[in-house]
Image 1 (cartoon, rainbow, N blue to C red):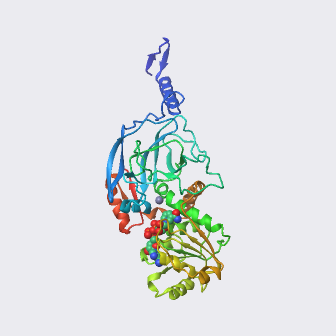
Image 2: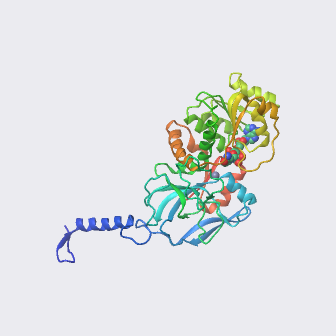
Image 3: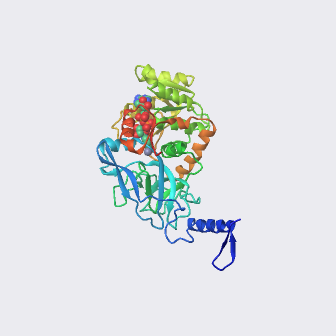
Length: 410
Ligand SMILES: NC(=O)c1ccc[n+]([C@@H]2O[C@H](COP(=O)([O-])OP(=O)(O)OC[C@H]3O[C@@H](n4cnc5c(N)ncnc54)[C@H](O)[C@@H]3O)[C@@H](O)[C@H]2O)c1
Ligand SMILES: [Zn+2]
């Protein structure tokens, strides 16, 4: 065994030295021996790369210095980030007037450094270097909103990484290799979910919220007949959330055969291809045939098509319910007949837009349950692009030939 002389003149063996080194490293990691940010002894680069939308339909991958971390800040090495319809709108038209902007809000990655005051995530779980995290809203003007506040508002109006105006930090979006999470952000430790599940958290939260809204009508029950109209990622996740809740009598409606087939694998018992029917009466009869001649008890409208909004009223029984969640943005006016569609039917309608912090917590459980019962959640991710090919990822999203497109760092 190697022997060395310690400073006091005594002798120490190799094991002792290793123990001391480990203790020093651990104390550095939990901040107790370090005045600055905790970094777990890992090499943190001086610069980071971030995709900045500098013009319509054009990202430049820019390199910026990583700013010094404040006591409440967190530096995350980005593993991946889903491309959202919102990113596609911004890429094509910049409706929010944000250019130049670092996009990407469906991201996840690993904590590589954090300020000494960072101890817990927004749900009260411990946070350590190496934990996998996602962000949610940034409540800089309203820090009192918590995950457990039942009167909390939805994300509308709050700031979100990936849609922040550019500023001196620059590392504000998840289409990047490092993101700078500032104090006051909501952060969740999701180390118990795999990368694919973590990239689906944000869109899945939209459906957890929509189903919670639907439940508030009192009409959505264990054995309800449910129509899900639209089988893009949103409709498919809607089916998955319903299935994990035990609702099985689901009919999916779309015009795309591949998506209808996926909807059945995701848990819809039957499906209707609207292209097989001429006119709304025939389509309604075709849908009812799938419910043994009955209209649906409840409908989820998961398209951004005004015609589809008009149609879904016809599919639902008197006294039934409807959740409209397909119009994240203004897709124009739709025609309905208030007497036939709402009033005489005594329909109960809820709108659903984004989600709340509480829905985020539920979403983590939903993703685990969906996998546990064998739903093909991971197959929603059809295409993966490296950061350097972010322009191609957005173009692929606009082509509408895949389902969920993701940026994934090597
Ligand atoms: N409520 C929210 O917070 C929220 C969040 C995200 C997205 N959205 C909205 O949800 C909608 C769906 O999102 P997505 O990513 O799944 O979009 P998507 O475009 O991939 O899917 C829409 C699907 O609807 C189908 N469709 C179109 N017209 C139809 C009709 N008349 N009948 C039946 N099916 C029809 C299309 O074939 C397509 O498969 C979008 O409009 C989006 O803006 C809402
Ligand atoms: Zn999104």
